[in-house]
Image (cartoon, rainbow, N blue to C red; front, side):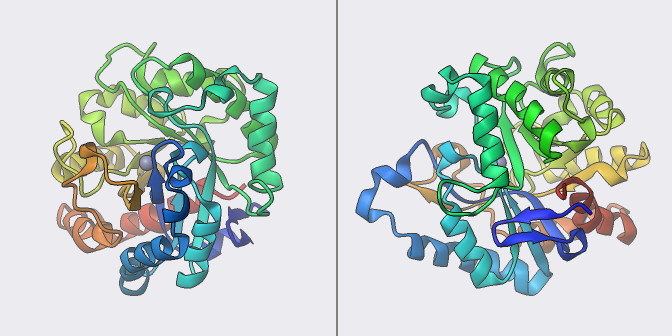
Length: 321
Ligand SMILES: [Zn+2]
């Protein structure tokens, strides 16, 4: 039977419960957490994150968080494990690679595809470094509408790892404004599929921007991808408002794709060394989705059954492998 791979071990899908399928406990650009040296205070940061995440757990019953932070964004699996223990929740952590222009490590861009595959597979099967903490999802990202060379390299390797292990892939999407299918999220998914990945094991993140190209969104739904509206609580990124999000989600539900919708906030519990200007002012907190957004969704006429599908059932069908 498929199991969800969490930082505290493998669990039955039914144990996942209410899930946030695209979040970050701690984010750091590049190797900021190492540059900070002695000032990196894991215990202090874990406490800050627990204070933020705690109310989502105690007040709204969140039981699982999918932390899609790859290593070059300051992933600290020990901190993630400590938070999971303190709050008694499941956290799935990620292997994989982020955007080329946001710090894709040069060394990985010149390593062979085999080495990338071996690295990701090892983090999934054996764990990160010598921690024994295993990853349960692959994170990939696009800088822009067209995949950068290092990104395409990582996508190809990830497709093979997915084929071998069955693990889910989460893609940070970009390029929704491009009308042609040869660029943007469709092209990124197509590359994975052409290398053997299963589209129904892929979550396309940041579909909040799909108002610019609803045709592309429906094409991705049609081939089985999960579509994540994970910028809940953010505004100011073009079409990226709660009202737009609700419109897109409603359209997908009307089209028969309720079982492929994911909802999350892309929130970061703590930043190192500080919050970059692009996210200052978003004012997110981990309980925001349940406290502010779900009431809006219900008010828009989305049934309790579909809310349950989105918050519990849909993550449960993607992440276990
Ligand atoms: Zn994210």
